[in-house]
Length: 104
Image (cartoon, rainbow, N blue to C red; front, side):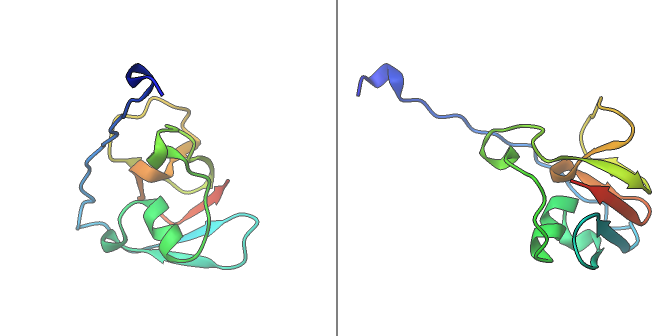
């Protein structure tokens, strides 16, 4: 394989989850049950995966914004600048401000 056909990319979005946030109940539409998010759990995506709930994501392999979901109720805050629609959430970069219902 020619050397010019081999390349690597590094993606990083270092974020810090504010420790003062309250635990929140997160429900994912179409899945049984819910899970409790805490600041120690990290982002919504990290917490969902730890709870055994699969959310769409490819962002960690370079498919940015593939983790976007719709917020059916509640409010989240992004840890990085996000210029998307108000009812959308990038789960790899967001934390809940209230209890949430998400639709993948």
